[in-house]
Length: 169
Ligand code: NI
Image 1: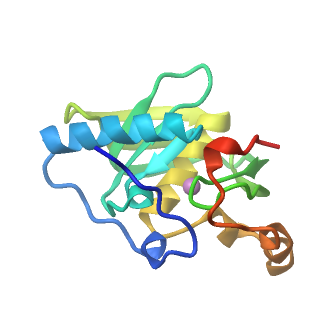
Image 2: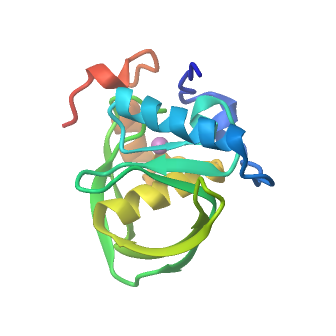
Image 3: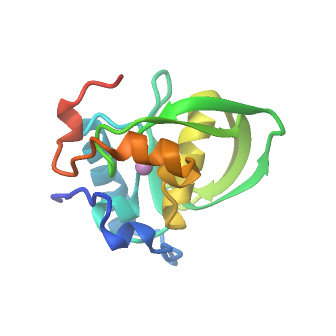
């Protein structure tokens, strides 16, 4: 399965992804291909819409964790405590900016075997889950920036940059 990254300002990234009704072999293959694409692009999260499949699925793989698949996820709790971190996105290559989000979350979803699960996450994994979940609703991390910060961050934006070739600041 050859997957192509959809990059900002493609209008598809602003679409709300549709619920997955059947967790079947096709979704399993898609999730596997998304994990591979995420690794090749050296990302730590990837949502379906980012590879042209506006369905409610995303994958994550942060350091020290295993790859994870989230299907039809819902963030059911967020901590009062917040944290700030320089975020990037495979759909906005080579652009990073600080985003404030809840430090910890509880998420409910289905895995690639069709099993429902609930998990608590904090730190970077909690952040990635929130970032990817936003993709399912057409939201990008740059939406959280003030206009001035966004304009400054995006001044050097080149959608043709290969994210795998860019070292993270
Ligand atoms: Ni992203």
